Length: 135
Image (cartoon, rainbow, N blue to C red; front, side, top):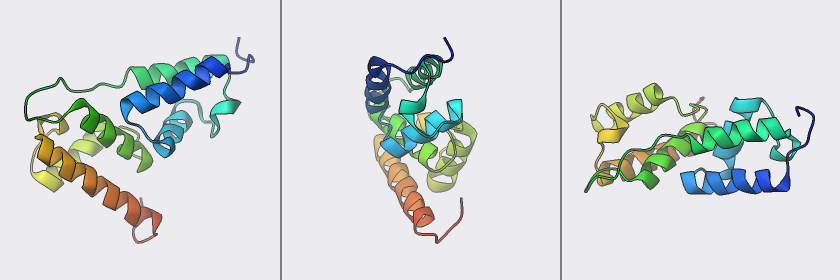
């Protein structure tokens, strides 16, 4: 089974799951590389595709609470963490959240704070891409 190439349906499932999680293309490819050490989704085997899909589907999200961070915001923060090379490391994400907002845990953010964190992560990502700072 290890040498069987990934199916078109698996590829579609990977992209659909990434969309549902709010993970952009760069973050998706970071996740794929983290999980199976391959840069191209089309180069995956069937078993590697299963592993990537499981990683996407098993991504934890906070429960919906009125006025608090939404699932979509949480997934966006997680996706940005992958594009920054943090690979969804909650300790690193929570460290950024605490420094940026004073809140100890990403799950305790309000919607407004979560929006600010997302914008902060986007700015950090832009500064890294411009070469102004190193990862």
